[in-house]
Amino acid sequence: MKERVVIIGGVAAGMGAATQIRRKNPDIEIFVFEQSEFVSYGLCGMPFFISGIIKNYEDLIVYKPSYFKTNRNIDVFTKHRVEKIDIEKREVIVSNLEDGTEKNISWSKLLIATGARARKLNIEGSNLKNIFTFRDLNSAILLKNFINERKPKKCAIIGSGLIGLALAEAFVLNNIKTYVIEKEEKILPIFSNDMSEIVLKELQKNGVEVFTNSTVNAFIGKEEVEKISVNEKILDVDFVLLSIGVIPNIELAKSAGIEINSLGCIKVNNKMQTSVPGIYAAGDCTNSFSVITKKEIYLPLATITDKQAQVAGNNIVGESEIYNGTVGSVVEKVFNLEVARTGLTENEIIKEGYNYKSIKIKGKSKAGYYPKAKDLYLKVFVDLNSKKILGAEMIGEEGVAKRIDIIGTAIYAGLKIDQLYDIDFAYSPPFSPSRDILWNLSAKFKEL
Image (tube, rainbow, N blue to C red; front, side, top):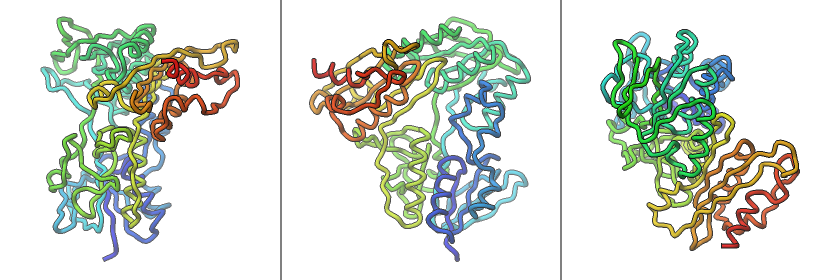
């Protein structure tokens, strides 16, 4: 039999790996099974489709399924769900969701790229209509159609992570009164209190009403959600958006006997191999590795998925590539702010037992005399024993993404904080002061 790779899941990890396999091997058969109708789309661009900045969901689609067969000789089967992995027979049982038929497909090697699903609340009224999640293109289309057709006036976002806050902006741009409900004492729980306070003020400035230390007790309505019970308050809403994290889709792998780790995702090594020879996994269903602690972590980010897909694809065709892990850099737009972080959170630093110090510094995005220079707020956590940077948070109206990437690079390279002092940062008044905030950060550390 001709060598065949079967890939379960056709979004970022699945199609990324399929493409990499085809680049390296023009002869191997590649079958991709995806249970939705879409493959290869820009999931991270979906909030901008909701806001209206991106007018059509088709603009988010990189390639349609037919492209892969015609241009890359990859067989993509949409609306096909893999029901079972048979390790002994090296087969998958696949159901066609359109006609209900099933068939057995053999594989030489298998890649599991089943992703993750949105977490939901199991409370009174959770089965009411117009309680949305936001995890894939289908869910984004449903939400956008609802907004266009029903013209809602009020909504509640449950959860205040970066995606939830990006959607708060999208809803405000649609003239929807927006509540954000967060069970923790602050929004953006992975940020420090003083940094999340900056974002809170930006939300409030734009009319978003925020409830922290607040628990949603019930959704209220007849067929559709009409109100939510939050602590002792009742809020009128036309719809609800759940943004409370994701759950890795591990059920298929678990039922086949593939090892699941303590994080609740498919356990892989640094070659993206699972516990079963010949079976690989990549993307939001798997673990990553922290560059700092060297431990397994679960961090569902597009950048991690892309790297894991390439490593898995290369190793499936016989190479021996290593996935070196992540520093966990993220950035999101929240109204006029760029909100970013990299490395370990302060809670993670405390949990790991580091002897650390936090340094907070304020700077400008441009030379002070240059028009419209914006404030930058930077907080960095430093290991006092090694002087290495453990993590950083940064917020400002411009120039944040560039600088957080520099810090992320420094963490990956194992640079000490005082070495930032010696790095030449590109300088011109429209882009930074001559003594950039990162230079001043290093200088401030030397003064401690």
